[in-house]
Image (tube, helix red, strand yellow):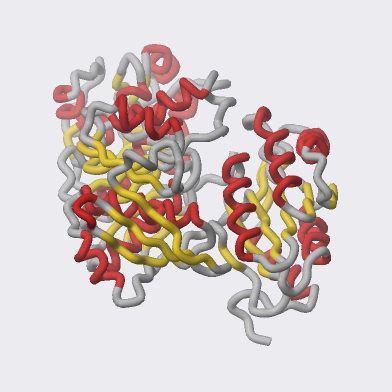
Length: 523
């Protein structure tokens, strides 16, 4: 697990009677609830604030109710738990509220506490294997250019206007989601952009939220440690497109999963294709075509029904980033924005003014190789990333990466193989080994690289700092280095714990050591 990340909550919470919560939601308690007011709710004792309900949920190793004493000391005024937790919490000194299934009830309880049942803002949700974070940031950037204040929640951070904090989970627990939503509404945001993972749907993290428009990027190999099959993984994503969760959908139909989702969903959907000749290209209502690519920008044309057309550019590498931008634009159109209004907001140059932390982020300066830092950690992301870099790089491509420990092991072979097929030099290092043997993880990646039977030079270097230096040593002017995996992260998970490790800072230090001037510095 990573270091604890606190939650963004309303600065001025409005107390609600605990008795009202129990009555209105049909919960049960044998304790007196008279004159007890609640202002918040949390699952962790580290985040308990006076006036909070503490949630005691069954865990993989221990029941959360066992931590009720620490919660009481921190100011918790009640505990919500199941019947097992109620026995554990007996005599804890605060009222015990019992629900049959804690996780399934949390979203609705949090929504009641934070008054987020009715949201006076447009709520966007984005799901898919790759591209979710980028779409959320592009949506937020477009809204800003349209003159609207927005809030976002992504793998990288939670943001409300200029207030931001680092994220813990891709989609936070429902208690945090509703607290964040309440804080956003308190801050008078006009739109909310949420990244929604498959786990978020399976684990009820967005329960109690109704989305105005939801978007789908793609589906590829990931999280098969959590889901028994692609069918199960797809089913979890598809839940976001049900009528009790969302009003409208926009679906990218570049793969068969998108086409299938568009055919099977029961809400009104609009389709967008971004790869000419792809499975959904012929029938898509919107089509995106890339017109120009460079190391620092991708330009495209988006054409829709009634010959509507928008020419735009996103300051990010790769056609997949143009695909993400196209999905974001169509989602805005489906929410009620006029395409011409969006075009006007982008100005004569048509530039979407967006920065996506750790997504094809250039950390090098004007001299030497171009060094990209990216969050891509799936075979499909590797393939798209290497293709994009190859298209704009006159020299060789150096690819640096590792793999997660205690996560989906079945994708490691493909990751190594795709890396060796797409790069001239492959440097395999450690990432987050967690409780696994780092050498064993590297061995699986090396096996995949060997299976490629390519001419790529393959280097194994377990020490991350040394691996970064060795990758830089393999490149020069006209070349590109891609570090896939870390993205925006500032720590590594090793031997079951965490150690500080700011990947961006380590790269810039290594570039300086090699005699190059990193991004943002002057020689």
